[in-house]
Image 1 (cartoon, chains in turn purple, yellow):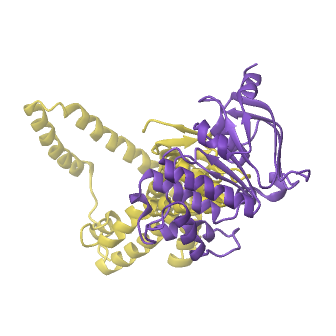
Image 2 (image 1 turned 180 degrees about the vertical axis):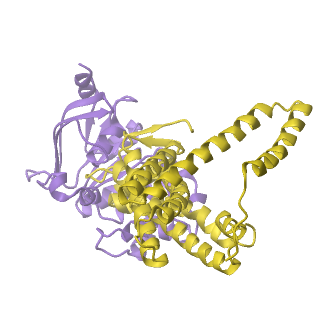
Image 3 (image 1 turned 180 degrees about the horizontal axis):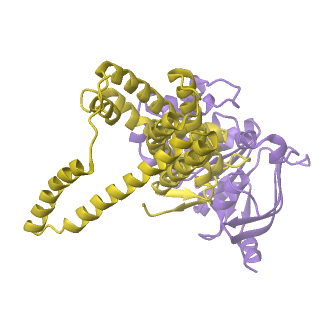
Length: 221
Length: 267
């Protein structure tokens, strides 16, 4: 893959409030690639993903998607294409169907909600028997985590930022999530940056690993 | 119209006797409320007499600058009271409350004096000041509740707001459910009182007019106008301050920025 990268991070520094967490971070994601992001607890993995989604500003550095900065894309449009899926699933609607359709009510989403595709994606992550009308708040955390992933995938992002996507899942469900993400990343093609503690499963799944230890040390120096 | 029965200071002394009885009971039972009751009674007399003299002075002048000076003092006091009650605040909250109360108060009061009652001149303090006072007294509750609700919701439900942003919502789209709830809560008191007015409560202004010898139907018409005017002022004030506060916690990059917020103890 010698094409120009889909997503590029240059000299990024990440702060939590006034506290520096990471610095001097460079990364390129090619289309079709899944990269694991590793670092000890408190390194700033979640803060990094928030910064990449432009939910907070970087202390320094540049972000680029398809050669465009967040300002050039417009911030809501950037987040539609560089989509964060937080570790703690939060459900917004009263039924699973409305939950998956919710983001299509935003003005920026021009595509329509595809109910059949939503059902297929649910089935892919072992949620085929969850009825459309079920209140998502009644689902287990592991089920909500998968609903949240499907909710994001339906919006066809170019870059997925997955924060511990399998933390609340059993082995079967975790494997189903990995298979689905790999398939979506390959077919679109998109890219994914995955924060995960489970080094065994994610090592086999991801194409390479971004180790944050050196960048955290540089930020403290 | 019948003549109102004027009260002398001797009549007030008789009314004060009633309070003395209450105070005596408190002292007799050792409730420890005697001093507070006395202080409250003295404050009532002093504050109201003071206001009476100020009103008499301003009414006597009857000029636009006199009315505006008095209105400015009232709006500042209302804005201060409005921003002290919410559990959270931010630098600039007073300014936001002041601007919305100023606009809501002046627009609604002017509409009423010039358009509804047809007072000449429209700024005649005898009409303008009491009407403005009624609007501000109610609107500041709407401003307080709206501000409190919005700041509480975006702080406590930060994860939800940021999730909507992450899914591609604009700041406004992510804030909308919370703005709606803030305005709804700000309007609950006035909507409630419009629902039960006359059934549960006979409003103070109507009571005053009737005691002053006015025909009850005439007093009712005035009261309807006052309720409409107060509801309009409260809605405008509440919506205005909630929108201004929303702009403070969302930045131009459609990020939720809670750094300007700080907690405050109630008044």
